Image 1 (cartoon, one colour):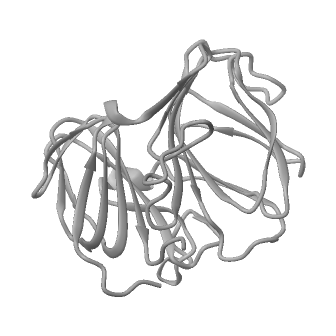
Image 2 (tube, rainbow, N blue to C red; image 1 turned 180 degrees about the horizontal axis):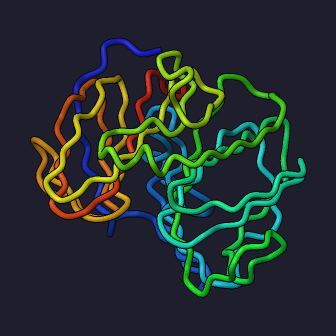
Length: 255
């Protein structure tokens, strides 16, 4: 847990992110990832990865391993097919929350649903755009798991909707559970002029996934911009145009 933190609001602009462009993949990393390493930018609170990915039709991530990580995927446009070594198969699309607990070890693939694959879905001919976020679990060595739930109707409210949480206050409320009792992810879809108030916590991470917003006390934020809050919260976020924001509330940090 944390004590004696100094209040801080740290704005990170989209063009300053690390970038991996492989042709089929354009990935923007908010934190150190892969061969991109900065010892001063490895995480914020419990959040280790916030990757803003675009994958071309007919391509994707081939089968690869993960372990001891809670991985939440949020699709903004298009559709993504998940398949893993535990026998799970799922189609992830806008408005559907997905969580994979890597635990003791899991193999999985993620591909643009450009051919309908074997899930009976209509082929897609557009890139898939999604944000993938990793948080550390409460404990290592848990059994791997998978969960997905559609929450599109809840997002119509325009408020901050709990999408993934391990916090006690969200028991029976959040769409999917993650194995960390100190972390929760919210999503808000905002029409122009709509506002939400951020929670208060030792650590917050705000990511503008689409559109543009005005952050109280910090000015305008555009798509791809992020803000790291320490020992503060409660600020208003107002959409300057239709926007979608992702907010992590965290009551602990790594190390």
